[in-house]
Structures are given as structure tokens and as C-alpha cells.
Length: 253
Image (cartoon, rainbow, N blue to C red; front, top):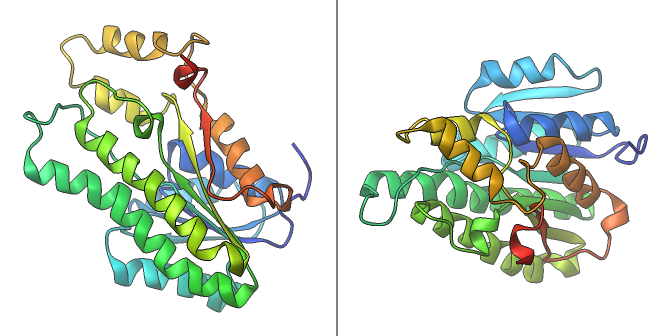
């Protein structure tokens, strides 16, 4: 790990209590950033914060609530004087095709994954303007790039995140705000266990998800965290509007 690459940067990570968000939070803090761990599960976020030796805050945040997202950004600015990095990681998914997706489930997936990303960008940009620039990193998915079976709502939401990333990148690049996204393949997280639990044979379903990646294994959350740290750093100064795939070759076929 590059020591202190993010020294002095002020960061927010949503969905920080587990999985990818947990590892991104630990990685950013490990490279010197001050991090706010935002999660709807405050206890989970505090458990992650307990593993961080540096300056860290925890804030319970429902990313679908504009007042809560606005308050999250305001807390960072009030505490540390500005915002440099936002990682819009919070997201959900369900296993269903379009006919099998209840309208309320469709709306929930889009609200958390897409609306939450939109609200993060909306309120982070003004704070980053005052800071002289920043980096916004959205978690999309290879589901934005290829069709995945039984993931209708998830594909739609993550496709929206990719399109929103590119639009926001163009809107704000001249202000020194870089907007990019990461498109993971299937990452070994608690989310995989929740999804596969709904199948008749969860073990077989998990094995199928693992085998579809050409490198023959699940992507690890730490690998996504490494990409997020790069995008957050000044080393990625010319990376704007990019979709960084970390998928073991799934989209190379």
C-alpha cells in the first residue's frame, strides 16, 4: 500500500458498514484520509470505525433521504472544513426477471442504488466547489455493461449509475471535480450470500456466480478498495468519466 497517498483528504463512504464499503473505508483511512462512515446500520459502521486508528466519524444515513444526505455532507464540512472524496457505495439488488419483480422491489433497488447516488452527487458538488475540487466515485457494476440473468432491477439501476457518472463528469470537470465509477464483477460479500439464499440450491448458485468470471474466483472487496483509493488520489488526475472494470475478465469476452 502507498503510505499517506490520501493524507489530508476528507472523505465520505456510504454503505460503509460491510462488504465493499467496509474495505474502501479501511483503505482510504489506511492511506491517510479522514473518513466519515455512513450507513443505515449505524452499529455496523461503528464496528468498522473501531478498526480505524485515524480521524473517523460515523453517521447513520439513509441515502434515499435527501435531508439525511444533506446533513451527512454538512457534518463533514462543519467538522473538517470541506469535502474532497465521496464514494457512493450504498446499493441493493434482488434476484428476479422483470415479470418476477414487484413494483415496490423495483422502486427500492432504484431508490437506494440510483437515487442515493444522485443525492450524493447533488450535495457533494457544492462542498467540493468550496474545497477547490474533489473526486466522486460511484459504485456501478458489470450489470451496467452486460446483461445478467435474473437481475432486471439491478441492471437498470447500475446502468443508470454509469450514465449519471458520465453526465456528472462532463458537468463538473471544469470545476476540478472528477466523477468516475467502478464496475465490479461478482464480489465476495454478504450480498452474494443474501442473493443466493433465495435459490433452491444456494451452494450451486454461488458456485455458478463464481465460475462465470474468467479468472475463476470471486473478486475480493480489497481489490475494489484499491481501485477506489487510486481514483480518490491525485494520481488519477486525468481520469474523468471513466468506468473502471474490476471483474476478472467478465466483460472482456
